[in-house]
Image (cartoon, rainbow, N blue to C red; front, side):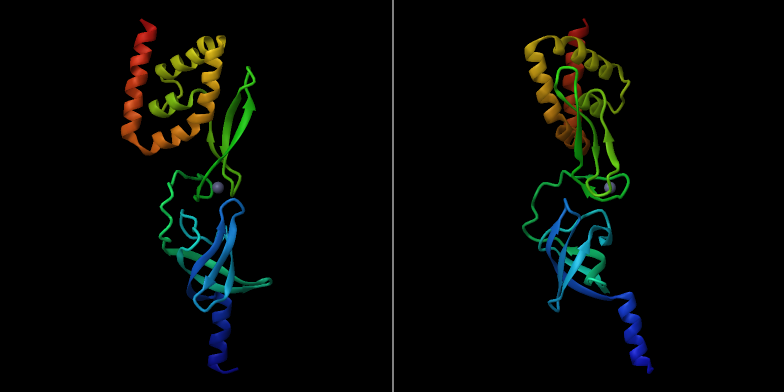
Length: 209
Ligand SMILES: [Zn+2]
């Protein structure tokens, strides 16, 4: 075997670095396809994406072109340039387990009054728990502590005041549907978080005196 053939063999094994464009990528399913500049379509599994960001359709990327049993696949894929139309809001969170940015799946329990109570959120890619919810989402998120007096107050308010009347039960229902997304927002915006905290402080003072 001459050196050129040997080089070629080594290259095939380690993969050749190429550029391409994301044709389609499903966050829910965790795979997609990327077309290399030479037109070859490659399978792309989520595990081959380097970094926290998952690709969007149309992103320009760089990856190792490898040959698997089922044809070409992309390995060690890096996003070079996000597609122009990716102005979508990024309210994903980083999974503590696989480090990917994901939209966590909420797991609900039935509360005492039949209201759906989110128990925890799971990473759709690796199944790890992203967040464990207990107590009040908003108050906990703003105060950053499950046992802060204000959080205890809100928990008490929820269980003893709100649950005893019809309007309160409706409020709780709304609250559980809305607050997980609010919490994500709060965690991203310390300024808004501060504003909410001020309002909660006011309410606590009003109720306790
Ligand atoms: Zn994960």
